[in-house]
Length: 99
Image 1: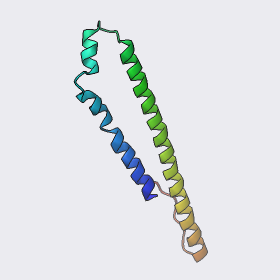
Image 2: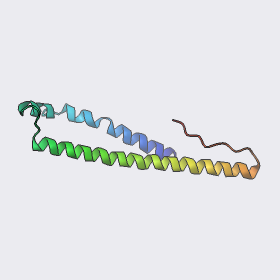
Image 3: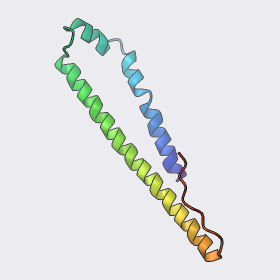
Image 4: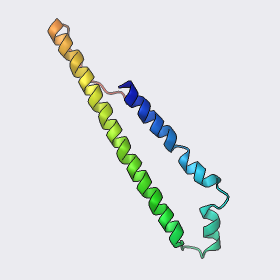
């Protein structure tokens, strides 16, 4: 479970600087847009935005899968603890997720 948490944090860490890396480039999208007529976007800009959106969707799906794995791991761990308590006669604890 600890490795899943570590992976999730690592993915979030990798995602956070991504928007800033694009902003640091010398030939930014804002410069290209200023050269174009207001309210219009070039085909290159549209294609770049589509790729970014697809990348973000893929990252979201990966994060959903990671969260699901964490929930399942937590559930299994708690179920195993409850089973041990049941066998030993100790009172059971309710499954609690911290938010």
